[in-house]
Length: 98
Image (cartoon, rainbow, N blue to C red):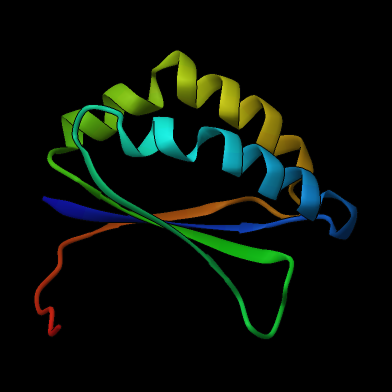
C-alpha cells in the first residue's frame, strides 16, 4: 500500500464549485477498487489550496482509477477550476503513530 498526495490550487471563484463536486464524487472515489482511504485537506494559509490524501493498494489500482470514467469525468470538471497546475506525489508510509 502507498499514499497518494495531490495538491490543487483553485481560482477563488471556483472553490465552492470544487467542494460541491467533491461532495458528489468522494464516496465513488473512496469505494473505487484498490482505494483504502480518502481525505481532503485545506491549506490554513491559502484557502484556495487543497490536498487529497489517499491510500492505494497498488500502483496498478491507482492507474486503473486514473484511466476510469470516474476520474476522467471528475478531472474534466475540476481541471478548468485550477489557478495553477496540480502537483502529485506517490509516497510510501514509513512510520505512523496513532
